[in-house]
Structures are given as structure tokens and as C-alpha cells.
Amino acid sequence: MEIILREDVQDLGFKDDVVTVKNGYGRNYLIPQGLAMLATPSAKKVLAENLKQRAHKEKKIIDEAAAKSDALKKLEIRIPAKVGAGDKLFGSVSNIDLAAALEKNGHQIDRKFINIQGGTIKRVGPYKAQIRLHREVIVDFPFEVIAEAK
Image (tube, rainbow, N blue to C red; front, top):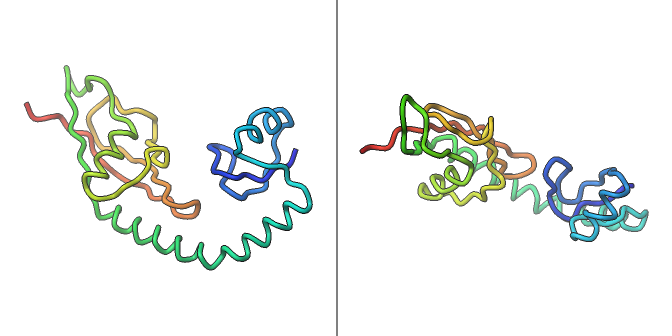
């Protein structure tokens, strides 16, 4: 089944992409949830026209995302966490904590666009995360988890 995505869907595609999915997934989940619509010939023509009109606006958005990525690359984030024996953390550090740390530094980024390599963090040390600012602008962001001062 060929569908047009109305929103970004994790591990499937971005908004306005034409993708092929299994019939049940499209019919029972994507279309009823409003995440996609059937890719009929007329819908594809409308999509092509919309994409053509949106190309100019998209350039400006990409430039803003690139400027934001340059600002993020200059940041050094250290996330303090409670540490137990050795360098193990009490609890863990996740994309929510990284989003909060970025917000303290003046960068509002939704946590669903932050992907920490390896999932949640359970030890002190340097780590990397991928931050998606736009479908074409993805930043590899280094940060560090440190022991909280007692």
C-alpha cells in the first residue's frame, strides 16, 4: 500500500514522503491516527504542487536550522548526576535530561528529536547524541555526564 505521510513517523519517513507499507499497518494504524493518507494519483499531484510552492520557504527553514546547529556545536554541556560506587549512576540520564540542559542554555529542542547513542546512560563519562533540527540538518552533539557535587 502506498501512502503519503502527513507527519514525521519514527523509522518510516518524514512529512510529505510517499512510502510503501503493509496494508494492515496503513489501514489500521497510520490512516486512522491521521498520520498518513492514501497516495492516489490526484493526491500525488496535489503533493507535488504543494512541495513546489513550499521549496522557497523550506530553504529559509534549512538555513535557520544550520545556524542553530552551528550554535549547538559551540556548546559544552555537562549533566550532573548522583553517582554510587565506582562511576555508576543512581538512575539514568536520558534525552529528557539533555533537552532540559539545552533549554537552560537557551536552545528549545523537543526531546523526541534527540537520540542518545546507546539509549539511556548509566555511567559517568563523555557521550554523543544526534539532534535532528530538520530532516536535512542532523547534529552530532557531544556532552558529558559528571558526578554531582556533594
